[in-house]
Length: 160
Ligand code: MN
Image (tube, rainbow, N blue to C red):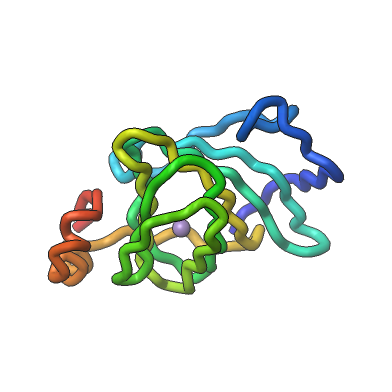
């Protein structure tokens, strides 16, 4: 469960493209396993624990970087707005286009990667209250890697 302070701007104006006034950059997962992701930043754009229970974030992955391969009970709605990249959702590889809407269902494995020569920036909508991600075990990775294209895509370390 997260206990974030509310952040409810009426208009969050950009200071420059993909940056917003008064919004600071955070490490993707300050308390996470740093070997599970590469070159990812996070910005909090809207947090409403009381009324709607929703939170909107902006993530940016530098070229060749990636998020953690993980799964969890809560869902994501992801909208790429900058650059180029691709993702794994469940066992599907998706080439991302700007303004696509990607639904990461409950307990679906997922990982986002920037292209080798461009950033990938995306909005991500979640509920404020959400469970912590589960990382893949050796057995999980073996199952995922039965698909050669998935094996080629994923960047992950075994946790057991
Ligand atoms: Mn996730």
